Amino acid sequence: MERSEIFDKIQEILVDALAVDDDEVTNEATLIGDLGAESIDILDITFKLEQEFGFKIAQGELFPEGITQDPDYVQDGKVTSKGIELLKERVPHFNLSDLESDPSVENVAKIFTVDALVTFCDQKLQTA
Amino acid sequence: MRWMWIDRIVELVPKERMVAIKQVSMAEEHLHDHFPSTSNRKAMPMMPMSLIVEGMAQTAGVLVGHAEGFKEKVVLAKVSKAKLDREATPGCTLRYTATIEQFTAAGASTKGIVELIEPSANGQSEPVVIGQIDLLFSHLDQNMGGIEYPEENFVFSESFKTLMETSGIEANF
Image (cartoon, rainbow over all chains, first blue to last red; front, side, top):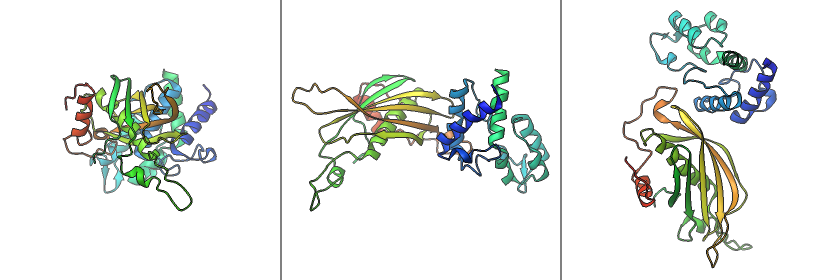
């Protein structure tokens, strides 16, 4: 499936799950910041992606869980290098370059963009 | 008053589907306020649609809870869709059919159909579909934030146990 086709399907899912307009769903838009997604929406989006694309998503596979609460991975409000390494391993669909240059914990949510979601689905579809 | 918006479970296919009914009654006090007469309108008692959504949430919630033996604290997280086309007035029966669409360790999504059965002298009115209510449930202890809640399952109260027992369904919680 082409990335543009994946994007179109994801756009439709996000419009439905987050009650946003389709022009708000751009590649750069962050789910939690720009589109107002809350943790429960991640579960909703996970279900909708599974239905649309026919693959299974394990808990924590789409969006890392528990990392920001772990003192091993976050110290003094910043993600540690160990935390960054873990993110790279757990969520390879995220572009972590911004977080690496400013590892403030608030920036973790910013890595979860629509584009990351498209990459995630693209990779899942290719390995399916 | 107990916060129970279904009267009887009439069908349960574990992990798949549950059907419950609710009799709308003039004895329910809120119907007298929803809506009372005014100077230019007669009283219009009807079941508030928000409580019809709650009835579906209880139907689907029990179905989701039953799937894991009521070990999980099943909470309504999102009303994905709610569309109701007709009022339910006293004497009517509401029939809720909830179907599990997706189920994981984190929660479940359900689809729901609401039907209305009008009262009739011979008791043979056909149910009419009056709406659709799709819901999303979360298993509270599996929340992404890692927040811990009391061990006791405060979601499925004694009233739900009574509902299941009077419906002839074993309730081990």
